[in-house]
Amino acid sequence: MQIRPFSTVPLRASLHYARYRNARDQRNLAVLERKFGPWATTSADLSLGTAAARIHPYPGLGHQLAGWISGYLWARDLGLQYTGGLLTRDPDGLFEFVTGSTVTGGTHVRLTSVLDERDPRSATVLRGQVHKALIEAKGKPVNFEFALDQPRWDQTPASTAIREAVLSGSHGTMLKEISMTKSPYIAMHIRRGDVDPAMMGGATGQSRWIDEEWYISLLRRIRRNAQYAGLPVRVYALGTPSDFPLLSREGVTLCLNRNRDIDFIELCGAKILVVAPSSFSFTAGLASRGAVIAKHPWWHHVPDTGAWVRADSEGLFSMSALERAVAQTS
Image (cartoon, rainbow, N blue to C red; front, side, top):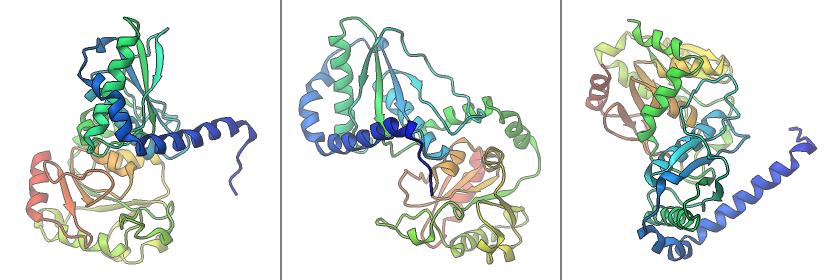
């Protein structure tokens, strides 16, 4: 049973209310577009505005990083200086982000929760709200805060910022050393000990749990190419060897229940990285300079260009796409 100290009640209540308010705002997006839309065409001094992400304090690091990235990209789109957000799950500084600072004495404005960037109304509402607040502030600074867990579908434009934050962080030297070695390997991240197999499929068919057969199909296809056939394969997961009876016969090394930050760095350093339906390994893919294979579709955008390769529900992918991805990163 999870213990919830009484001292956390106010915070948990505010988070619960924020989620309710976010859902309400997103249902009323058409109304908000009519309210703020006209302001989106006005001229405001954006240099007086900063923007911060409100990141949920309790989920894992991957979830929190997705929130940080969302704020970073929305701030970029709105022309605001980004001041980041608190990553409570990164106490040792795996990431060292360089951001601006909140302006002391500035007005605080909470931005409306909108749908992700695929809905054009979202940018209109946020831009209109920002311009309205800056104009009404009459030359005074305004510190904006995005809604709790403000969504963003395509997170790949943040790749450079994520890579730089990892290289500047507590394990950056380790990543540099791995990148300079001549011992390439394949890394596979698999969700096991931290997810319930009963959740397989889910309402959209996009499950965090993927059968072992999917990984085996994918791995065997990779090995059909002679230049990858001899690469050592490391499987990163929470769980026990009994969770991987089939993969164990494929000559892989099981890296189980290890230090999270070191695992992240080793995922980033792989020549070929197979990410799980996980914001944790997806972010490793963003920071990686190797080829990245991801199951498609997923709840974030999975590109099929550059270093990224899409694999279908059977673990099949285009070998020419993998060759293109490896060449892109060589």
